[in-house]
Length: 155
Image (cartoon, helix red, strand yellow):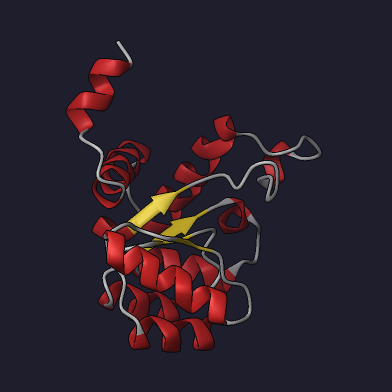
């Protein structure tokens, strides 16, 4: 925990977001984030409950959903995905881990992010296009990227 506290302090000092990986320790993580507030950060491959998600969002953080959202019966993460405000959701693959079920046995890869986006759209009752646009905007915001600059680089 001392290392984590140090990383929180560095992020706060530099004003940079963290990418946080948390499995089975959400209570301890929430306690430390309350104790040492940081700039808005990303909860990588979020696997917590909707309530944990609400608490993180209230602190200004983002929930990033990965292949675990695509697993049939993943009720907890589906409920979190349904309840997160649109302006606080992100998508990722966690490649080569968490391959979406429809892509197995292949290892996960960045191109499969569309599966995560489609599943997020499905559970939220939104279009794939709106989820893609919103998560792009959110990623640019949290990481301090200018949307126009990125578009120009890709031309």
